[in-house]
Image (tube, rainbow, N blue to C red; front, side, top):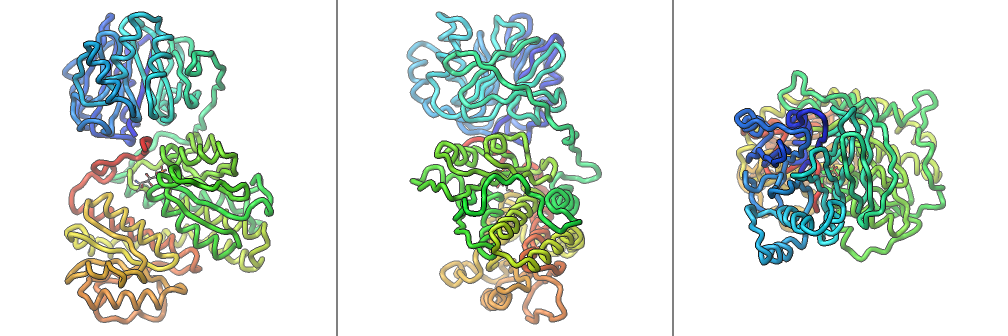
Length: 606
Ligand code: M6R
């Protein structure tokens, strides 16, 4: 959460910082700011709201200077406001900060006693005053070392100094941070995406490291101040600038891109000539594994839940699923014969990263499924399977969800085959169906017109429910999450068979309920549950697949039929109308679809 950029150059830096902040807006968008060093004076321009508002403020108040830092914020300590926006500065230093300083209350009390005056409600200001204090008796490097020693929590920092015209400090503990290299200038960014428009040469800071960046030189240190050598990596050039094209919103574009991203992913992992799976370098043998634990947050957690059904159906592995924020604080029994799979679009989610880190410290087998291959989670996993979706900008995850499910499904087929737990013919027919998945998703996108007819009811209702059994249950959770996230109405995903144990009491006349009932082994049971909610007045939107036999029930409000495929792959198809439902309901309300309130794309605080 929050985005950092810093530049030291021989040229004016504020417009380049502003451009990078636009790229970082996906990390937070409730306030923004830039500070530069102009003729030996630190100057700031800040605002509440988006980078557009910052640009307007910059037009009124020029910000010159060859060294500077910028920030987009997702509030943790203190409301979103200009005064709480970063950078936070004293006469001597200016700081941008991602993450949380857990001991800030105590540090603030001590600094107030020393006479320091606080202007904001943020935890960040303690860093400003701590450095200023240490600079009284220490050189710059020692002041940084001493300041870092006082901080508890996880953070990434960018710092400039009033008396250092071409110097920038970056420091990382927990939150990601990267350095970029350019001609006569160097950069700091909270991810490589922020740096990509300026350079493709980067170094990632590891935990508990800091760096001193000058125009022509970058030095790296551990927190004790010992110099360390780091590799410069070259970023892939395939992630070109990602634009909306003719679309109004990234989310709409990303939903419609799904046939193509599925095709890319299938091409990557399936050898169409031999009809086999291309995961060759999997580091573990079949007898190495007895169980699997899948870990993720939000939508990624839902793809993990989905995978549990597939793994249980096709392999003899024990399969469990965990939310990363719970896993990381439980008393886990780490097992050598368990494969810990981490699923994350961004690869930077703080809780998922912490869970991975815990597993690495306990020396167990780790594998990640990510979209951003340069991310911290990808870099620190023993084995990585990218989902090949291209950048996902909309805060609501769509194409990455299908990509995560797809890679998990393919991994499941591979393990089932290696362990000889799946019949060869069945495997081959499942692979054949995978080759048709892109085409089927494309046809299912045509359900959009029908979705537009029902979205107003969902947008205006005080609440709605999404019901499914078996393979459709994780999709019900995902459909409800999309609606909550974009339309700000209560929506609950529930196992259809659980309704009578409590939630049925919520059903009242006219309440919109999505029933996911594709014609799989759970179909008849789900239809019975649908009748129970209809009998209590629910307005049912039934999502099923095409079939000769009609689902006859005179009181179904609307039905949408997706394409036909094997049962395992129906979850991909029934997801599509739910994505469109959330999108059009939010459009109906006039909400900010790509940047819903209170959220951010990459959740780098716990
Ligand atoms: O980048 P990640 O996949 O690790 O992100 C996990 C969640 O924060 C994310 O899926 C979130 O739930 C989405 N905004 C849902 O649309």
